[in-house]
Image 1: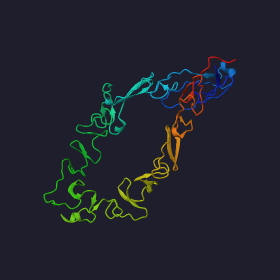
Image 2: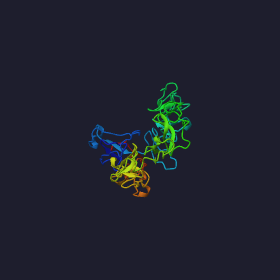
Image 3: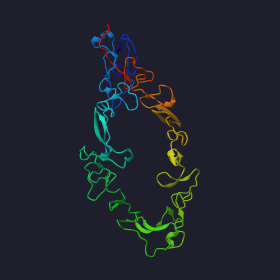
Image 4: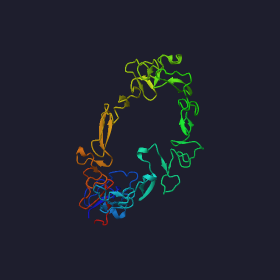
Length: 398
């Protein structure tokens, strides 16, 4: 029997295992901290790391190689890949919940899914990822048969939360009762009375051309709602920079400037961009004359402000992406240089960049907790959460 003396270190979850005799006194530690939601490996501890002769007096415990999976760990077959011994945590693995093969399912028609909690599949409300922000389903009647039956973003009886009822006739819009500030409710729809040609200044106040309107409108002009009043106005994103639209009834050039986004008319008629490096740009508050992205200390890349020192999509230069070269790798941009590292719990143990970080250090018995740190493969010692499995020895050496 292979045994080892352990002081304050864990005896059932060890990151660095070398097969030694019981006469070797070795301090052993964990390779990974316990992650939230994972079942910790049982541990053997001792209040004092004294020598082996004090074992019966409460001194160090003796730990030996273990090969049987401790609860709740189990060896479950995996779809399309080999299973490592004791790799499944039956308390939290949604593919093997409570028992091998017991998979927690998703029920899309009733907007419900499930996940493994303490060895049992617990139901939860489910919204498709592509609909996130547009739907938010809840189980407001507390029944499982019909799943999560209410979308609280639009239901006036459960607006934003179950039981939050909107006043009669008031719609639920994005989880809030009624219209946003500045909008009014007309025929069940929120409209802006300052610009709506159908509800100008008030509901159902439709802007129609007067009887004496020009048979041929001036260029880029029309009759509609402007500042809550029905009047002639510029359309097609045009502007009347020479002021003849109001003075002339049917002749004149109307709204002669199309778009206030040029260096000659930037955000308004006659506003010129003349300083070195300035352009007419819109950085979120309308068109203004400014050096692109200068106010935030960034660089303009394809119409967006980008931090070339830290942006993985443009690292060091516009469009230079930091794409992880292999599986289980993460990329980052540091001072304009792409940096690559293995994802937590994985390692590049074969030194081949082509397959990335191919080894699961939490489960691989030949690389347990770190590349090259092998458990006792001949004995069948498993690797659980980055630690070779140990147990308290059944015998005490002489």
